[in-house]
Amino acid sequence: MIDHNPKWLTLYQKASLAAEAAKKAETSPGAAGRCMAAAQVNGGPACVCPICKARRASGREIGQFDAFWRDQATPHDLADILERAQKDLIVTLENGTETRVETLSPPASKTPDGQDFRLAWDNADEFQRYLAQWLPEIAARIDGDPPEASTDLADTVRRARDFLMPLTEAPEVTKGAAGMSRRAYSVAALRLLDEVENLSAAFASAPADDDGDEPPEHEQRWWRECFAEIAVRAFNAGMLARAAGGKEIEADALKKRGEVAKNQKNAPKGGDKNRLKKEERYAVLNRLARESFNLFSNVGDRQALRNAKSLAREYDRTADPKLFASEAGKPLRDIWFKDWLATFRLPGNSIY
Ligand SMILES: [Zn+2]
Image (cartoon, rainbow, N blue to C red):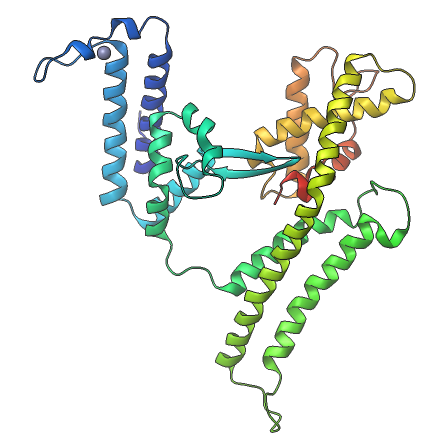
């Protein structure tokens, strides 16, 4: 059979499979008892127990991959490797109702979350650990100059718009004055984002002195970069302040979730039944969606909707009674999944 994969992918897959096999061999019952590695003297024949054989194979394949990316990989290969590894090394960190998706890194790494990677690290196989360790170096070989502030700002604004646009039409989740509704806030936020862009452009091109001439292009550009630097920081400060303030509410939300789970065990009656059914469906779908986070990050609403429906379908294949079906057994309607998606994409729920 002809291998149509690019070379990096072939080597990557081989290393990945070999490391997986080694991990399996280590945990297979009785295998450790057959290992003679400890009894081998220097220069003696290598142990041929399943563990040692699998470990050697894994080391060999990882070595091949290592040699390839260091000496032969093109910048394009390196970018593909980085992208693939980031997908394969997803770790979900949690705090309160917030979750964040990160790339696995060694637990001792000097980020505040270093220790939180411990469990994922312990569960990782040799190739995953190898990748986690060398990813920064691979990334460093690709990245030229760090992105300009204006690129950073454009990216932030784009993600914020993607998040806000659906909310301007989504059903409200709270009752009360319209000016404090989710829709009103979303519309206002979109307007502020427009203003950031418009004001930056206006100030950057405003004549600096009495002659009334616009500053030269390079100077305008310099100003726009300055404004972008400030805008991104201000935006992030707002997001973090909001998240910090929300931690107290998250504690209540978690308490509430616990109660809901308890109530579900005590056979709900009457009017509570529908609400609890919804809570249960949300809880399950949230969990499934977080486990397959890549199905929801960086995809449009229509695709995300399709993905949500297929997760629900998949879940119901083995569920009895079916969770994502009406009492008559019909699948839930699109509008139900749309509502769910809008909630799932709230900041506390980690789309960003
Ligand atoms: Zn052995």
